[in-house]
Length: 64
Image (cartoon, rainbow, N blue to C red):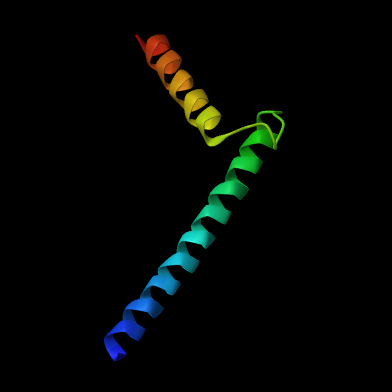
């Protein structure tokens, strides 16, 4: 029973840590949306990564 309690507590702690990480990511995404003059509610993480990918590709092309 002690092992089960330890595992359960570990799972709860991991879940709380994950929630904190998601909150941090969400805050950073909103800050980026503001910086890019995008709608905070409409901009998804996929949009962020797509924008970053496009920027990287264009930057590398410009370097060449």
